[in-house]
Length: 225
Ligand code: 5RP
Image 1 (cartoon, rainbow, N blue to C red):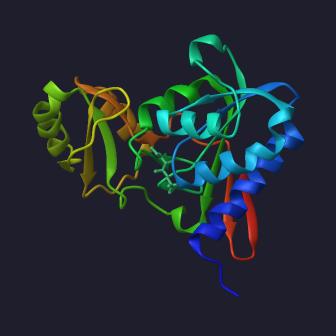
Image 2 (cartoon, rainbow, N blue to C red):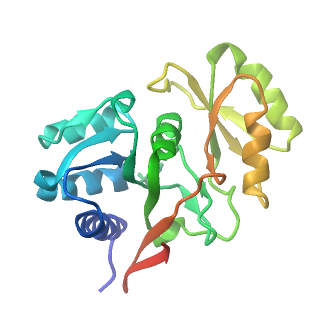
């Protein structure tokens, strides 16, 4: 019987919950991502909430969902290290470079991930690609820099489009960049970081995932470690 995309997301969320239960010391602090797959992870995490001390959330939406389950959420400034950060992705390569930010939470995601020892990415198999860029690359921009950044991105070959009616948790806007075929994710992430006015770009390549849990109808595959 075939599985729906939600069933695949649920299966990988449970696998990530089991990974946390099996590998993370009792009383640890866990970083938690944003999006529909992360939401299934949060719901699964509730079953082992007594094993963890607290979490750090990568968005206001994630914070609310965690607290709704009675799971404690700390400000990142109170936390100096975390064994693991669990989050989804919009695209991921077999080299574990990702495009993220479809939900617009890329900046806080990149920051929380930076504090974690290990990035565990949870995806259904539709997210695994040979080359990043088919999914429009989200870029969070300071509002007054929007047109400047758009012109610079066009020079790099992308077609930026303002995400209409969307404001990030940080009060900024998102440009979704189409028309990219990203053969060098680390180089392109670095190039975008050099454009003044960009807060964060959605390439997670310099710090990619360490472990990918990938849901397939045949079971959850592991790539990386
Ligand atoms: C949010 C993200 C998400 O991880 C990404 O959009 C994947 O979401 P979903 O699990 O709903 O497919 O980066 O900013």
